[in-house]
Image (cartoon, rainbow, N blue to C red; front, side, top):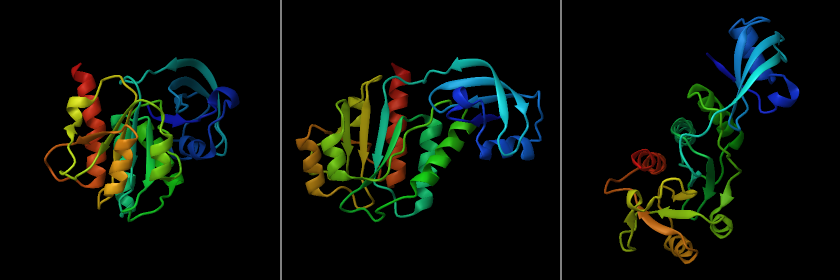
Length: 235
């Protein structure tokens, strides 16, 4: 069954205009049809379409079901967006499909792209959440300066992945603790600067490698996230 998204469904009993139009105009659903609605916070609502209005469809909630995450703890991927905006959009889609709690765009010294269209990324995340039958949508904040993020990131398992072989690193797969609150830093195409690496290490971030292969920025982020899931599934 196709799922719709309405973050305030429990209070309003309404689908937003975008989902209402898709439901009524595109899918030609009518009053009395059963639909599923997610709120992006982990809840799935089994509903009946009460009013098939393409500008604001009203539903009657029959049942609310909490869908737990399939992974423990939280996973945050903080990444300097690639120069090509399409690659960042592709990454957000795939991270949501795999499972992630937060995606943070970073502005680093070597960043070729200083900002991103966050609203578009959020829409892509919602679409991926619905398509992959999830009920929880990751948080995607506005672009954060690297220095600020390093200083203000809350406690938890914090890793920085970089390419500089002169600074010792361990494989993420050997350090990741299943079920822990985890944040992984992924640098831009030109990697983190030596100053940025040192700043992270001085603030308690653990240096990690994702393997011997040379990876694009967006590929590295995907590998990092999937490594966490694979380790969790093996525990």
